[in-house]
Image 1 (cartoon, rainbow, N blue to C red):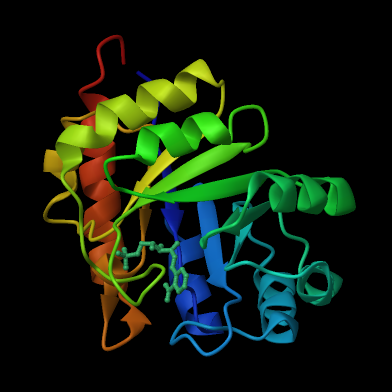
Image 2 (image 1 turned 90 degrees about the vertical axis):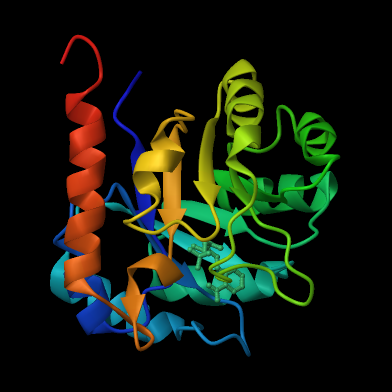
Length: 220
Ligand SMILES: O=C(O)c1ccccc1NCC(=O)[C@H](O)[C@H](O)COP(=O)(O)O
């Protein structure tokens, strides 16, 4: 078992980013989906990351973006990963990979055919984020799915030799329970927020739980 990837997503301000970068998170996420509550302007994100020079990988979250939309963001922000959080097709993923040469993570909204959908993206997606399916929303809902399903998603991604992060309603209080299913990585937004801002206390208590889990891995 390896140390889990930790993605802190939905950074909305320089203050949020200062808190998330100071944690041991491996990935920091930004929502570039217009008309959603965590949308951030790419020019602002470009400025923030230059001020902070984060060591962590930067992930841009999009829903069915056009190539032009992606170009506009990448002009300002040097993303490490493009995360597609909508109903994108294999051919759309291929076009995006060809256009930018960046790793593309596909979000699978957990449902009974989630595994079949991962098979469809085999050899194309460079990673997966498994999130809850909530009517009328794409992500950042604070709603979790049945974590009994985590091992099957993790193993399928492992067979494809790509990463798999679990998202949806994870909180510092519940992360210990989630870790019993040995996810490769976790992705949080609402669970480390208070009043729509990232909360340093919640981030620190999340990272303490993750460290406790890491310390319990045999051979450490
Ligand atoms: O966060 C949003 O507002 C959002 C909007 C549209 C598409 C995706 C969005 N969030 C994606 C994320 O990566 C979240 O981290 C993930 O869904 C987990 O969210 P939460 O349940 O709040 O921890």
